[in-house]
Image 1 (cartoon, rainbow, N blue to C red):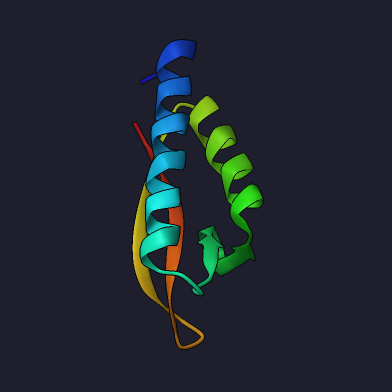
Image 2: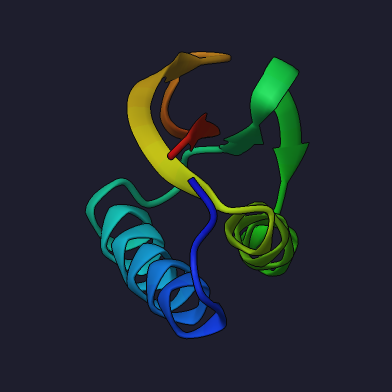
Length: 78
């Protein structure tokens, strides 16, 4: 499924908001991209935006990484 540009923008903005909520809920943890690549908030924002523009949905999972509750980000084809 290919999303319109408006749908893509809604997806990445909504997903950024979800990311901010998770960062607030799990402070001090890592932010991880697929394959457990560590990133920061800005790196995650860019990755999310690119994934949305490729017509993907973004999913989050909170799991322990290096002893901390961390945010794992992945994409799921729409």
